[in-house]
Image (tube, rainbow, N blue to C red; front, top):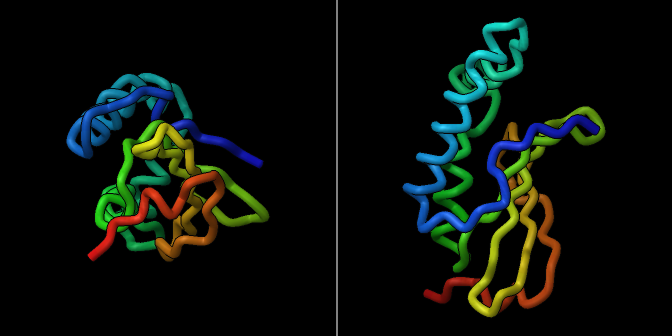
Length: 122
């Protein structure tokens, strides 16, 4: 299993802070990419070609359906497919991990306790 840590364990205040943090991390990793690590460029190209769902769409979906703060986002390879794992802190302090297929954006799993307390009600 290959892991690519996209966000460290921090408590950003809202989606804008998460995206700003992602940009800072990406900029910090540019020297590594220039040194021969083409993973970041490959991921960007795959998103641009529509082969992978942009992280912003995953975060928008989570914000619309669940209450909480993003703690960590990882991109992992599991059984030959890429998955986004998003760990959130719920309103009662619960930690819940959401797993999405990176190619389709489909929610494929949720782990944690108190998940129902995080669901947004219409």
